[in-house]
Image 1: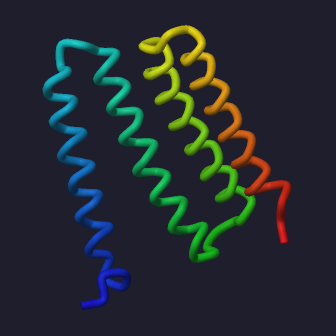
Image 2 (image 1 turned 60 degrees about the horizontal axis):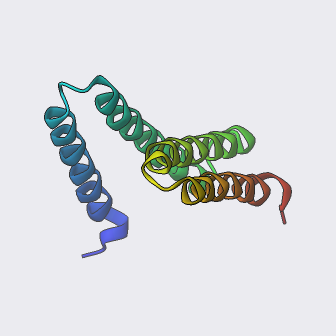
Length: 116
């Protein structure tokens, strides 16, 4: 069976993400910040899958699609860094933020500045 053509692995992965997100929201139903974090991450990942597929196929406006991919990856990096860094010692937290900023900058360079 050709998994890539049928998208079976993608479908299973997305189903696992959806189930895990729903379970996390259910368990965090008394913590609005946790629910917002999970819901925001889920929506961002779902949109990222959509735009990555368009980007890989060369569909749509290339510049807008690249911008959407970069914005969504930067958003995900930022929200995860903001969630993790406060739990770390200050120096490690600063390193988490610095790594997130470097990742966003490198993504911008790769998608917009370093074009063949």
